[in-house]
Length: 251
Image (cartoon, rainbow, N blue to C red; front, side, top):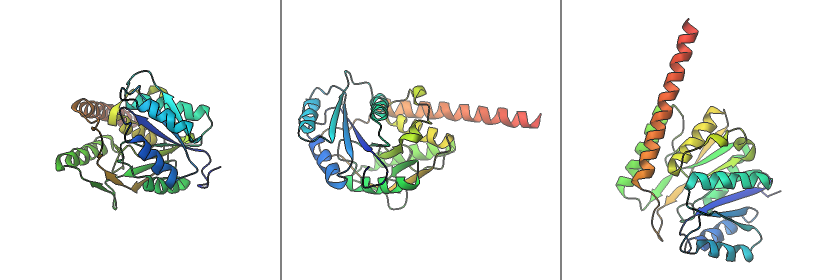
């Protein structure tokens, strides 16, 4: 049992070519929340991130490594990690980036909020949240994407695309993860929308998002296009279902 009172907590850190950042983020997490465990889910990084992770795990029993054979996307990495966490009887799973954009000090706030929630989203776009060193174009893309998601899907979330969040295992068990096919940042929208539709208690807490200083961003046009296409598709399906429900009630 961790000092958070939440049971066994696992922080999942997906990696692809993050050998320089990984030791820094793991050290930060261990300092901020020494009771949590860490799982590095590495997608066979060609830069040797997996070997770095193995070295860190060898010197710290709280760190373990999930070696994946290919780079199959963020969603696939998290889904495999969720199943690993379930098999190992963890009570809470945290998603956290390896590139230093998520501050370990904010992890403490996220876990504290989970004591009265099922899902906690680290939010850049609620009061007190902010981004540091982002170009205006990136900020507009994120804000616009979240507004589009909020209006199109009808969900009351300010930051559904963020990747710093925590789930109770009981919440993940209700979310029909076998049907999740989305990747990239769209995976985060998918999970948030599933949480809303399941009626789970969701809390957004403000975080400070720091633009990475080492390595290259994984954001690209394909990720943006997938998110736009899937959110639009989900929104159309929702409107169709709502219309059929209204017609049924009126008949």
